Image (cartoon, rainbow, N blue to C red):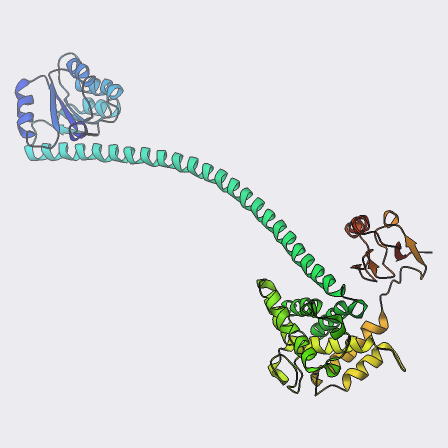
Length: 440
């Protein structure tokens, strides 16, 4: 709105020309426009052509249409304009009509006081401007509220869309992480199987060490991440031995010549270098590097001793010694008792003596209890892969035709494992079926 459009118009109505000129002179310096009309009829006609009429000042005594009547009609044309009636002291009834019918907010007596009249007109114009400004601001507020409501509704829609998209992405990411974790563990299993393919001497050894070491770590109250690192390091414990001639691996380090021992002693470092390219395996690779360090400092490759040796490496070394002892022929007693007794002889020299108590508990459970299947009888059946049913436990290790360990004894089959067994048997057929325990 321009300044010209925003200026208020004041309409003066009187049938006496000299009064209109007197009023114009009084108001000539005011900040509003002044228009005049000599009768009520003329004023109504003029009102229809004027813009932003904020005040109508009308004489009461006029020929034809009097002031009260004119003000009443003017309300239909300029409903927001303020109305003032000029009247004599004797026109009380006319003043009341002007207020009740014409909507006059004030009346001024003739003859008037100039200062009082000018101030009354200023106040009326200001009143109109305030009311008009209030309406304008209210209209803006209503418009902005409508726009805000629409914006909020649109925002809700966008938020819902984004939330749905984020949820979908989160689910996809979670699925990807699950698949990535499954692939990661699949790589560990594959590498562990690769180590065990070297010969019967290492068959199941790394898995036994992994179970013993992880169980001991749990008993010692280690964190789940530390336990998993120990388990993975145990599964890949001998990966650095790949490439070492079998004739060297068939003898103990004490029986090796200088050149043979030099080559053999490099396998923990070789294993760490091999696994160092996979960031997630670096903590496990560090434990593998130090699993041949001896408690008295005479081990390899770094001659660490006591608590200098990483705790996980000490746990793995104890489990490794236990299972190697369990693989040798027994003289008397159970596997658990014999293996623990042989390991006990090396406490303080090769092994950490503080771990003896926890391994006594773990070893007894691991070698003596075996897999329990109370809900099944001891009846063992050899089945084809297509005959397997979910819930059946394996009674023997499941090997592929080339000797790769697929599942170990005690595993309970589910639909996924059964499908894997079928796939394995199609890729590398075994000479025998799958041995499971079934109900009578």
